[in-house]
Length: 107
Figure (cartoon, one colour):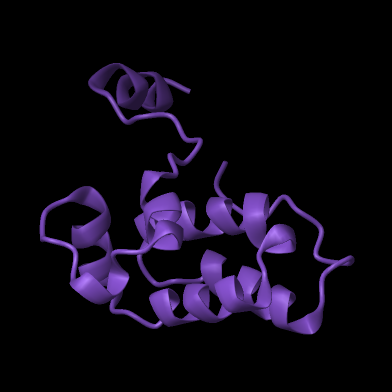
């Protein structure tokens, strides 16, 4: 999965904006984590969770990447159940391997 697959027609304007921002983070890895998380969860998040999610999205992408991958310790203000849900989300994409790159170049 590499882009938006969920229709936003049934979402409020706020949820549509958040969904769009999730797929346009600036770092592709964060697009995949936040975008796919949002596609699965955006409709069910409470207003308080949306507030928290927007605050999380306001963090720097490089820091988010480091916190999600465990390269840097997670700051106390992000040690929440919602951040844990986002960080534990595993995007649906194929890993890049030597064999997959070779197969692509043969096409």
